[in-house]
Image 1 (cartoon, rainbow, N blue to C red):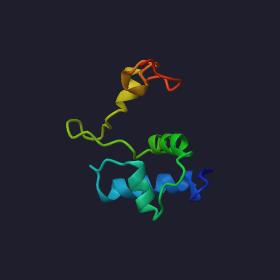
Image 2: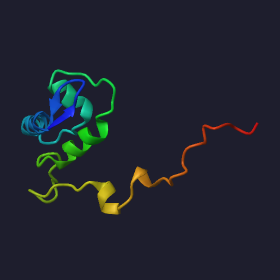
Image 3: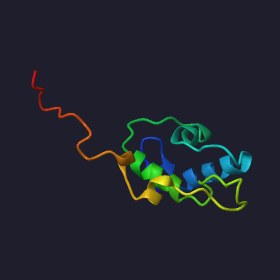
Amino acid sequence: MIVCHCQAISDHDIRAAVDWMRASDPDTIITPGKIYHALGKRADCGGCMPLFLDTMRQSANFGVVSAAVPGQQIPNLRSVKGMSHEGRPKSHRISQRGSAV
């Protein structure tokens, strides 16, 4: 499945890049920028980013292996807490409609 139409990146490409990065450095923190760089591409419009991030997170080798318990991956902390948007309420942004001065 094509994830990024601007750069023609598929879900297979993302998973292969994650696997390659994890194999070369088990402790690396994998980011979208590192994946684009590994694929020799650059982000363009950003419209693919939600699907790009979901594909990254679903990769079997995405998580960092815990040094405390060998073989155990550190979970995604946001999903453990069950909170999205880093715990901010929905109204965390200031309205753009106009400001009362």
